[in-house]
Structures are given as C-alpha cells and as structure tokens.
Image (cartoon, rainbow, N blue to C red):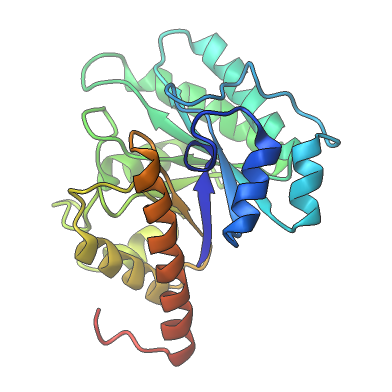
Length: 261
C-alpha cells in the first residue's frame, strides 16, 4: 500500500502548496491530497488549474503524486452550482495528474431528495470519464450516506465505471448488518482509496485488521492519513504511526503471512 496525507496535516495553517510538497517529501510519503473540506484552508475558489504551477513542478521532481482532491461536500441545495464546482474540481485534478476527487454527501437523512444528489454525481461521473478521473464516495456519520452499505447502494444506483468508494476503517466497520462475511472482498471492487482519520477513540486493532484484510484482498493503492479536526502534534504522530504500518504491510506482503486475519 502507498502512503499519503492531506494538506491539512502537512500545512495546517498555510496555503503554500510548495511547502506541503516539501514536507511530504521530507517524510518519504508517496502522495499528497489537497483537502477541500469546509474547514480546510483551500477551497475550489483558491485552486487554479495549470501544468506549470511551482508546487506541481516540485512534486514531479521528487516523484510525489498529487493523488486526490479530498473532502468535497455535496448538499443538493443548488444543483447547477454544485455540478459546476464538481466539474471544476475534476478539471483541476486532471491538470495536476490526479485521478481522484473524494466526495462526501452532507445531506442529513430526510433533509433533501437523494435523487438530486444522484443527478449531480451522475452528471459529474460522465464528465470525469472523459478526463479519466474517478469520483470516490466517502461515507460520513450522521448523513444520508453514513455506512458502507449506503455508499455502495449510491454507487450502484449511478452505475458509472468512474465512481467508487473511499473507506475509513476506523469509522465504518465491516460489521455493518448489510455487509456479507467477505466484506473486504466485496468492497475491493469498489475501493479507490483508504482514509484513516486519527482519533484517540479509534479502535486501532480493528483498523489494522481491516487494512490487513484489504491487503489480502489485493488492495495496493493509497492509504490517506487525514488530520481533519485534530491537533498538530497528533497529526505528526499519526503520520509516523502509519508510515510504520506501511513498512509492516510491505513486509508481511512479501512473506504472504496473514494468519492474524
């Protein structure tokens, strides 16, 4: 698995993407995600597509992948504006060589028709396909898409080859009553990225087990460490912790030992 982290973690109080690339390279990370959550320093108004941006040249020189725009949230209140914003995000991702825009659905259960959200995502997925960019649905608690099964239902209802799943094993257990026993095998065909949100309350053992099961199922793409809502010293600890986990997964992958699963 390849390790990346968000700009929220790398530069929590700065808008200097070149500095973020430098810090990611210092830690030996494989990739960086530009966070565009409501609480992030960046938003789509601040991000301008371009192939000669200094941070992008710096990233390419160090072979660091700008692998995701992370945390764009849809509410369905202004569908045309959200379609336009999402297309802009897709264009930006394409321009910087990223293959993924990670999406959240901010609608609470019963707050707005899911058909509107589906229409926005379907329209964006068609647009993304032309640029070979994928959209990833990330389940978020206390919203209409709050579980693995709800996310997979939404993805299936849109039926696009460029729409998949962003999965946080610390927040969404395989024990979802609608998920089968072989949940890791099931979600592997949907999975675009694993995201880990550091938290003192997270069940580390369960998170590690989920990562091992997904590794066994054949997932070898990005694990993104997300520092959203956490203090800077916790962020640093999180990167070090999961860098160690990456090394561990690499070694057990070589030895093909998964007895602990």
